[in-house]
Image (cartoon, rainbow, N blue to C red):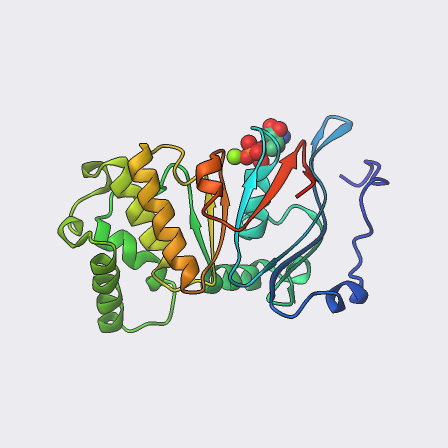
Length: 247
Ligand SMILES: Nc1ncnc2c1ncn2[C@@H]1O[C@H](COP(=O)(O)OP(=O)(O)O)[C@@H](O)[C@H]1O
Ligand SMILES: [Mg+2]
């Protein structure tokens, strides 16, 4: 609300000098991103002055204690959340200046999201869950069918295609969730503790999958508590109480 003091917030205006400072193959440029919640007359900050650049093809892990702001940051990057201040450049586009429709378009075209708790639609089969992201796009039915069959094949889950999520193990559900995230060939996969609910062997399978996707050019940003999982990536961003602490 307007009467709250915002003196600790950075200026909201876009500074053209900032965009110019983005290095060539920067996929994601974050400048002074802040997020806060109002409690009565006070305000608590969840993210403070977040500055980070992520290049195309990087494999980044975000680590930090519970409550540090990791999920919040991932949801801002994924454009699920638009209640923040600062500047966010995605493929050189100033996200802070885009309307909801334009953000949704960027999100659908370039971003795949994987959640800790899979988030598959329970009333749809594996096949139908995989078809969902394609249905948002202008793709012919026959082409959609071949894309779904292709991904079922790649992920070795052809035999599961007519089953419902509750007929699968956690590891299998997460495999389907990753397949759903990659089916429309996004530039970046955002994964929030993707192996948090899995046994270690199932978790390893998901991480190996991310590694292969990254080797073929997909940028990966994962939140993880696991040093083993972080070692699959090439860089760690540490968050604490909403601040990035020495990378
Ligand atoms: N709707 C909300 N209102 C107030 N505080 C919130 C809300 N949602 C999240 N938070 C706070 O934001 C902080 C960061 O949360 P989160 O990003 O989920 O942390 P992490 O993923 O690192 O565990 C937490 O302290 C949490 O309590
Ligand atoms: Mg979290």
